[in-house]
Amino acid sequence: MSEEISLMKGNEAIAHAAVRYGADGYFGYPITPQSEIIETLMELAPWKTTGMIVMQAESELAAINMVYGGAGCGKAVMTSSSSTGMSLKMEGISYIAAGELPCLLVNVMRGGPGLGTIQPSQSDYFQTVKGGGHGDYRLITLAPYSVQEMADFVALGFDLAFKYRTPSMILTDGVIGQMMEKVRLPEFKRRRSEEEIRKQCPWATLGRTPDRAPNFLTTLEMDSSLMEQRNIHLQAKYKEIQQNEVRYQEVLCDDADYLLVAFGSAARICLKTVDLARAEGLKVGLLRPITLWPFPSEILEKYASKVKGMLTVELNAGQMVEDVRLAVNGKMPVEHYGRLGGIVPTPDHVLEALKKLI
Amino acid sequence: MLQEIVISGFGGQGVLSMGKILAYSGIMEGKEVSWFPAYGPEQRGGTANVTVILSDKPISSPIVDLYDIVIVLNQPSLDKFESKVKPGGTLIYDDYGIRRKPARKDIHVFKIEAMDESMKMNNTKVFNMLVLGGLLKILPMIKLENVMKGLKKSLPKRHRKLLSMNEEAIVHGMEIISREG
Image (cartoon, rainbow over all chains, first blue to last red; front, side):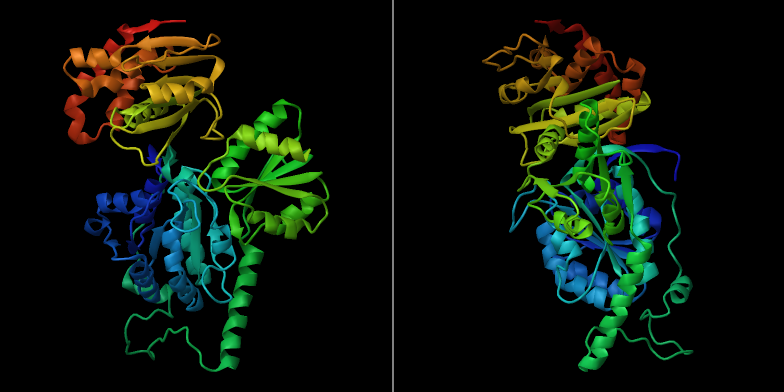
């Protein structure tokens, strides 16, 4: 971490963190509420310093396929968009997951469906953790709830992507993207040399070399028995990720009678609701999934036998609530509270909803 | 200390940048800060607002129900935010173009004629700094020297020559705020 404290938007923090991580390329197409990512990158002009490429593609489809190509060469590449733009990228994301290629995706969610609204929302939970693109693939999904985490999760997302050769997603929304907070940016890391990439990514298609046969990346397999083997391999990898990479935060859960379960901006709002509830003598805690996939099911199952009820709070019509219900498996009631279409609830709204459950 | 503040006015009045200077000043004072803008289709002539929170402790929600301090710079903002002042809280308004004055009796109301003053000064660009000065006069939550440091931090380098003009406006703003109720 650098010593200096900066004040910046979550979107800006992502841009700074990408350059400092030693990322090789960003390919994107502007869309509110995340355009500050590409704007900040253009301002930072890292091609003059670290050598990182920043490119505004002609469309979201072009951008994700540039990421596909860069990732195939073992480069640390990324793209970002918001909801409707992310939908356009889904075909490419499925290909990248099938090709077992590392990359970082960022979705600063806005309200949908359709062109929707530019206001904040969390309604792409299903799209991100349950598919989005076609086929049996998964995305490592990180849900930052502060500007500091926006900066920190860039490195975490890239590291996990390379560790497991799979795309990671930072799933955030207009609240965290647009708000400014204090942030300590990570220290600068040098971009990897070609030699280092060859060593780290022996599968990368870097061109024919004299000492080995050419690498070959494809997602097409006409023989179904071989395609099944590919799928079995992917599923084994996903199982390993589920075993190793679950992350969550517990706030005053120990003595809680009721748990709020929320991620990202909704978790920030719930933090205050916990304070308000405790001031009224209600024993309320917050469990915040930090990875949405893999989902922290085990810890929720543990609390299912300790608390009287859970309330998931989401800026959507009830998406993560399905995973919470699966985790607690009917041991106690799980209710949902959410606002839709870009409306952000306040801590008092959440408290009212919680009291209905109690 | 926890101060939950909203600043609301027309787009182009410098509402967001005033909030940014306040947030930077908070950092200079060693506070935790958050700055959350209404980032809708706001534009010059439309309405814009920003929530700034200053606190000694880590800030939970950047979005709040009621505010300790509401600063409104036009009629639509007054209509929207008068009811959002905490009882015992503070409302600061500029009465330029105001047709309906604040009515609540359970809050402290202050008036600052910053728009008139900035026009008199023939420099409407310092309007928001006059308002910031007024705020700091009645709620000296941040030392003036830290505000000046925050101002310097938040001004892009190319605008550093405007520093002293803005500093003077902040000091002048402290002189033109008056209590109404």
